Length: 431
Image (cartoon, rainbow, N blue to C red; front, side, top):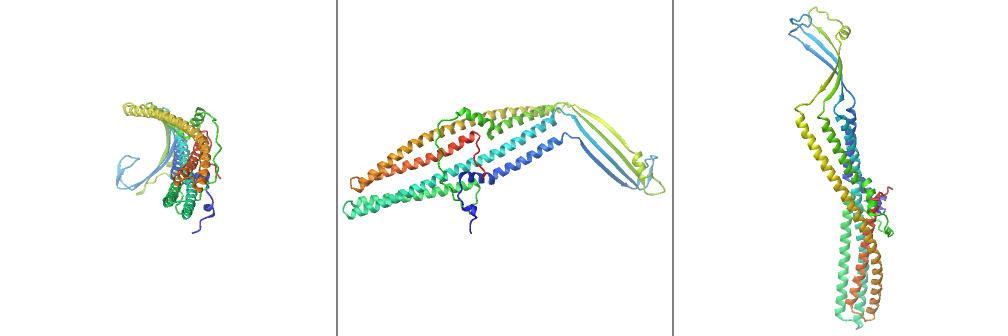
C-alpha cells in the first residue's frame, strides 16, 4: 500500500511533538474533563437564579365521594383539574451558592491547566524519544563506518599475509575485529528500531505507517551562562502548568472550606405561587360554572419566606468542615512540595545543560586528537611498524570518542529545550 505524501516527508522534532500532543489519549481525556468543568461552572451559575415550575393536574373519579359544595357524600362521577405556577429563590445561604460558583470556576481553570500539563507531558515524552532515535541513528552511521574500516583493514592484512609481511595471527585478529564491528552495527540497528517503537508509542503513531526522521537538524549553538536558576524558577513558578495546578488545588480547597462554613449558618428563602382549579360533576343534572369563571374565581396566590436554622444537623456539618480544613492543609503541603520539585527540576536542567556544553567542547577536542592518533597509527600499521592490536585500540578509542560526542550533543539539545521550556518558551511550534 502506498503511503500518503505527508508520511513520506521527514519528521523533525517539532512535527513529532505536535502529532503526539494532538493524538495522545491522555490529552483527549483532559479535553473532555475541561468540557465537563465548563458545564459544572454553568450549572453553578444557574443556582443564582430563581427556580420556577408549572404544574397541571387532572383527577377523574367515580363512586362515593364528597360534594365540595355541600360537604356531603354522594355517588357521582367528577372531574377535577388543578393548575399552578410556583417559584422560589434563595436569599441567603451563608455564601454556599457563591462559593460553589467560585469553586467551579477554579476547577475549570484547573482542568484547563491539566489539559496543558497533559500536552506538555506528551511533548516531553515525544521529545526525549525523538532525541534517542536521532542518537541511535547517528550511532548506526558511526558503526557502519567503523565496520567498513575494519573490512578494509582485513583485506589489507590478508594482502600483507600473501606478501609475507603479516602472519596468520594478524589475519585472525583482523577477522575477529571485523566480526565484532559487524555485530556492533547490527546491535545499533536493533537499538534504533527499539527507539523508533518508543517514539511511535509516545506519539500514538500507527505502527503500519512509515516514520522517516529528520536527523540533519544542527545542534543548537552552545550557550554561555545566561539567566540564573532563580530567575528561571521565578518564571516557571508563575506560568508552568505544574505550579499553576498546585496553586489552583489550594484555591479549590479554600472554597470547599468556605462552603462547609456556610452550611453551618441559617438560610433564608423566598417562595411564591399562583394556583387555580376547575371542578365538574359529569353525572346528573349538575351544572358547573364555566371553565373561565372557575379559573378566575378559584385562583389563589401566596408569598412566603422561610428561615431555616440548623441545630443537630450541625454535628455532621462540623465534621465536614474539619475534613475540608484537613484537605486544605494537605493541598498546601502538596503545593509547597510541587514548587520545591519544580525548583529542583529547573536547577537540574540548567546544571545538565551547562555540564553537557562543557563536555561537548572537551569531547570535540578529544575527538580531533583521537582522529589524529588513529590516522598516524594507521600509517604505521600499513608500513608494518605497528601491531594490529595497537591499531585496534586506537580505532576503538576514536570510535568511542565520536559516539560520546554524539551522545553529549543530543543530551545538550534535550536539556537546552527543557531549560527554554522552563523559561516560558513553547516546546514545539505549530506548522
